[in-house]
Image (cartoon, rainbow, N blue to C red; front, side):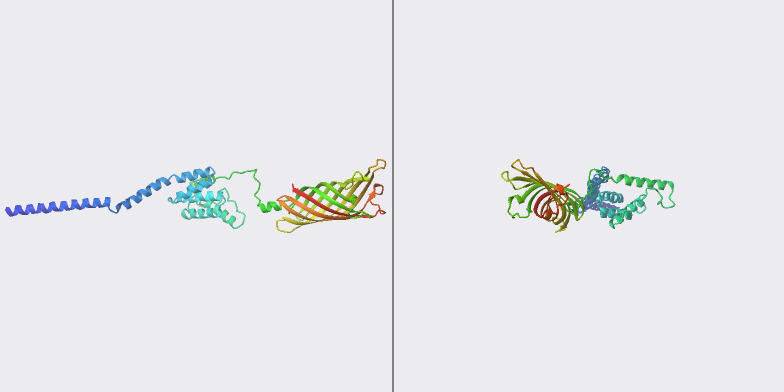
Amino acid sequence: MRHASALVVRLVAIAAGVVMAATAEGEASAQQEQSGPAPKYKSQPLNLHREQLGSAGLPVTARARMRSGDCPGALDAFDAALETLTDPTLRRDRGLCHENLGHVYPAMEDYRAYLTAAPDAPDAAEVTARLRDLQERASGREPSLASDDDDDTPPGLGDEAKATRKRAKQDAAAMAPKAPVNRDKPDYVSPEEDALRSSLRAGKGVSVAPLLTLHKWLFEGASFGDTETWSESVGIQVRDSFSQGGALVVEAGYEHFNSTTIDSAIISGLTAQVAYELRFPLDPEYDNQFLLAPGLGYEHIVYTYTDGSTASQTLGAFVPRIRFGWRHMLQASTALDVSFDAGVGNFFGYSHFPLDSSAPATGLLALEVSVAWGL
C-alpha cells in the first residue's frame, strides 16, 4: 500500500508538472505574439484597411466631378483611386475624361485596360467603338461615328441582355461630360497665320493710309531749284488686296506749290492716282516687302493770280507713273511705306481735254511716306 501510494503521488506530480509546463508555454506564446514581430503583420492589414476606407469615396467623387464638367479635377480623383482600387470601370471612366479633354493616347490606354480586364462587359462594344475612333483620329483619319442603335449587338443575346447593354451605353454617354459650346469664341488661329492674313502682308482685304508726298515738277525752262516747281500734298490712300501678291490702290490729295502771296500767282490743286501694287516679300513673315506699282495719275492745278485783275487759269494732266517702294510692318496690321515715283505727262487747258499735243512734256518726281492700317 505504501508503494502504491507513492506511485500515485508521483503520477499526480508528473501530471501537474506537464499541465504547468503547457500553461507556461501558452503564456509565453501569447506574450510573443503581443511583443514579438507579429505586430508588423497585424498593422499592415489595419493600415490597408484604413487606406481602403479612405479611397472608397474617391470613385464617387471622381464621377461626380466628371458629371459636373470638371474633368481635370476628376482625373486627380481617378488617379488617386486607382492607386489602391482595381475596379476596371475606373479605367473606363478615366478614359472618358481623357477623351473629353482631347488626351487621345491616355484615353486609348485606359480603354484598352478596361477591355482587357472586362472583355465581356455590357458596354464593351461601346468602349471598343470609342477606342477605334481614337485610333483613327491618332492616325489622321476622320473618326467614324459609332451607331446609337443595337445593330452591332452580338447574336444570341436575350432581351434582358440587350436591355442591359443599352443601359450601359446610355450610362457611358451620360457620364461623359459634354464640353460647353462657346459660340462667341473664334476658331483658333496661330499668331503666325493670323499675321499673314493681314491685307498688308499676304492676306486679302482693305487698308487705309494717310500720306504725305513731295513733288518735283520738271517744267520746260525751269531749274531744279525753282520754288514754284516744288509742291507738297496731303491725302488719303485706300488699298484693296485681291491676292497674296497684289492690291488695287486709289489715292487722292490736296496739292500746294511753294509759291507765296508776293508771287504773281498762288498755285494749288488736286492730285490723284490709280495703281496696281505688286508686293514682293523680303522675309517669310512679310515683315519687309519691296513694292512695285505702275499706275496712272491725274493732276488738277489752279493758278490764282494775286493782282486781282487776271482771271485764274486751270490746267489738267494725265500722268502715267511708276512707283518703287519699301514696306516695313510695325505691327500685325500696321505698316510704314516709303516710296519713290516717276512719271511724265502733258498739261492741257480743259478746252483741249484730254490731251494737248502742242504742250511740252513735263516730268514728275515724287517721294511719298504713309502709315497704313489693315481693316
